[in-house]
Length: 164
Image 1 (cartoon, rainbow, N blue to C red):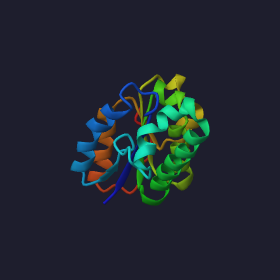
Image 2 (cartoon, rainbow, N blue to C red):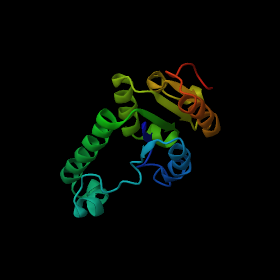
Image 3 (cartoon, rainbow, N blue to C red):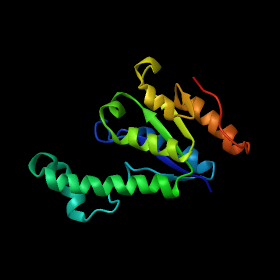
């Protein structure tokens, strides 16, 4: 069963990146894929106190905040490196403000995992590095769904080309 990691803004996204992930997950499950949604997995490898308090520690206890963030970073990157077969990334102005999505895309690219990217902003405003990590780039979620249906539903051997 292919395993998808859903990469995109959480920290700066108004809805913490939940809407697009929640809308796409049922489709991926219908393809028979396992989905890891980091926006839904607030627990990760954190204690209950860390989960509840770490965001506040960003301004009140930076050292403690950094320690928790390092746990989250390790957890998410391990999931990509050890358990993911591909990434779906939503790149928009909120992802561009953060750093996690860039790191996830770079790791996936470096490990040879397909990166299916949907742009939520014009391609000319998107980092060349980020575009370079993408296997395919799409201007919306419907073209992505069609490509995934064809690729995984049709038994294609590998992704090629651009969807823009």
